Length: 492
Image 1 (cartoon, one colour):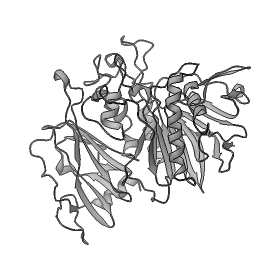
Image 2 (cartoon, one colour):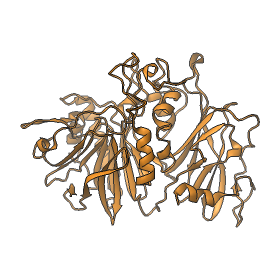
Image 3 (cartoon, rainbow, N blue to C red):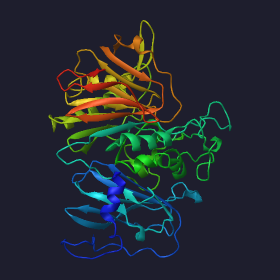
Image 4 (cartoon, helix red, strand yellow):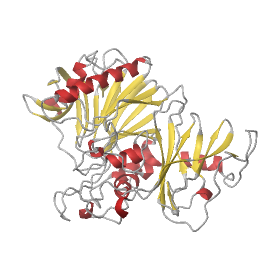
């Protein structure tokens, strides 16, 4: 029986009951005293709900609910089970619709709810929203199913998943075929049904429709020039195709270079800060924030910790940007300080732009990315990542690659930029292994220019890694991450 079916059985029959008062044994939900009355009027609009891990001091999980229903400004109540009781709590409004000059950039009310650790069976109460359609379709939301003293058993990693439409000319060869050549929905469906992840990590870059009007699947809200940074394109390029995964597991969201705030570009920083950042912002504040790059943030998944490293603006040149490297050196020091808080726990560093991924290889040399980030790490106090930083998770390059180093304390670099957008050509792994990348010798290089995702599975306290294509099929080899002082995978 699926997780959603179990949740449905657990909460069946309690949706319409409401009481106020202290917790006590009861088959009815315990409702917060401030719960709003159900909205009046006909059902209208569309709402999207999801759960994501955040860096809260007293909680790690947050429910988010974005709705276009009218009248705007109303938030529903959410329900979850904790300590044998059904609890019902009103969601908090973060932002109202933002319509500059009458344009419907963000026609949504965004609501959030902090969910305590250990809660189960979350759902949106249907009687408290006027939205005609709520996604996921059964209004049920996945919560962490690992104990605080444990960690997720299966972690899926996706990235660079939108449909790439860069030319304003409909039918241009430069544009991806969003109807037949864009596999994100297929990938999400098979990953949810076959891999059954407990957690999904998205390493960044959500919307690729630079010219939405030229996509061969254009639809209202994402069918006009200038709409790439609007709500409609976030739904089109991410929420709708990823719905099977959003209904299966909580997410960790990282920021990519498509989520920058640079004026003059079609940057989706506004979408990022409004909907997906760990601390959502109101309106379109992308260009008014005092610091548009965010310092490292720790996200806890029990005893597995992620550190979000905002490399969205990192220079991609072949020579290090010295100013950026100096900033990143301080940030790598912060990463190591965070890892020192739990030296016996595993930390995964998430940086959208990779430190060491190989782009090209010849018989004599390799071309890799990113010298600016690598220079920042070399300038940090330790000149290396802490020993319990076990993996670097990235995207940016449109391929899959696992790279580790011979007899090294450097963590392996896992790049998953292959979950939907137009693919890059993967290097010949036989020409990568044995070459030098940032001063160290490559031991294993496993690269695929195939759409898919990575699955990390916890087997007896060892992480196993496998690439899965968009049909959910696992590709050999299966790799096991070392737990010793020397970092790296053993693959077979």
